[in-house]
Amino acid sequence: SGHPIDCFRDELKAFTIEAISKPGSSNKIITIAGYMSGIRVLTGKRGGRFAFMQLEGLDGQCDCAFFNDTYDQFAPALNKDSVLIVKG
Image 1 (cartoon, helix red, strand yellow):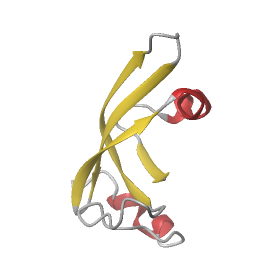
Image 2: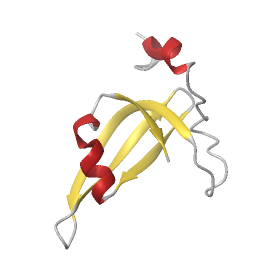
Image 3: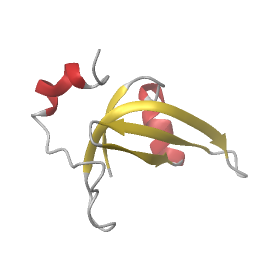
Image 4: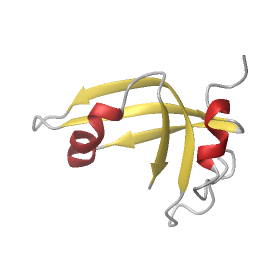
């Protein structure tokens, strides 16, 4: 009964995953992986949907945001308790 992403360690080795606790420069595109512990979906003034989620990695946690078209594209995969790889 370890971390929810423990069973995906071998698959994650195929990706260059950054440490969530040390995300680096805000101008750099990074890839992180983790367990989605929560998500909040909202609707904007113009009707577009967006989401804020909490991602927990082995080394920390962070908040991620998905806006409008990006949210629409990935909404089917954004389920609480899922393990995700996020690039942005």
